[in-house]
Amino acid sequence: MSTSEFFLIDRYFAARELRRPDVVLGIGDDCALLLPPVDQHLAVTLDTLVAGVHFFADADPEGIGHKALAVNLSDLAAMGATPAWITLALTLSEADAGWLDRFCRGLFGLADRYAVQLVGGDTTHGPTTVITLQAHGFVPPGSALRRDGAKPGDGIYVTGTPGDAGLALAAAFGTAMIAEEYQAYVRGRLERPEPRITEGAALRGIASAAIDISDGLAQDLGHILERSAVGARLEVDRLPLSPALVASLDRDTAMMTALAGGDDYELCFTVPPERASQLDSVAATWDCRRTRVGVIEPEPGLRLIRADGSAFPLERLGYDHFG
Image (cartoon, rainbow, N blue to C red):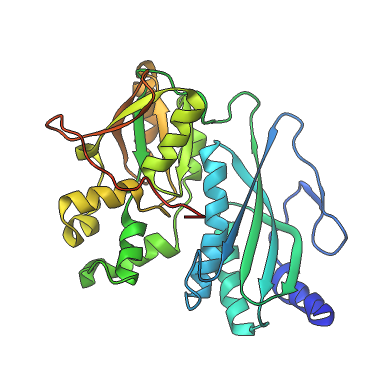
């Protein structure tokens, strides 16, 4: 694939209009040369998407391109970082010009919105489509959002409406029916998640811990609890369920989907009580809702509680990559 590899790089990835001033040398050499700000920490994350595992093989290529970047930007958002650069390793079974055009439209459409420049990567031939994308961003020293800062008494919050992507997957596998009026919305929530970059940056100095919801709210909140050596009480009747989720599933199943569906790429974060008013102020400008769904407690473990005080059963916490 040596000859066509250079064609692919030049045709689809090198000739981009966006040029950041902190990129000394981008695509076209053995390495990129980058100039990170001296007063910022560099945040780095990487995700891999495999056809038939993380997206349907016949999915819209534009949505695949968008999502490949969005899942990485979501990780940066969960750290309160501002995105800057990406690298891309792309394995393809064939060099389909139409697929690549649409893939790049989705990838660079989102990249341009956040002034993110592709600075390097690799293309290769393989038995199936594999997309590995690494993202880099900046965060002021001492202000990065981490998983290990939650304390007893902190409120637990989520952005958006977790469960919508899980509903889309359930419909795709034939275990849920979605009314026609909600189908485009739900499909968009799965194929084109919106990284909460603005919200993550606004939470610096306010949130005590944060994580993005990729494998399910219950499971990802569990990572905060483990790293912070605390427990939590999550009030399931407070979960922000979208109209699509409520209309498509009975209430218990809707809450289970919001807790364990995965692929939402919303933020779950904790805020000390004394900073709740600061959160109210910054959240008033957000494009998405934020909802308080529980409280951090000293006793380890996650307790899912209904409004009447009874326990809410959950068969699984979320997505298991090797389950």
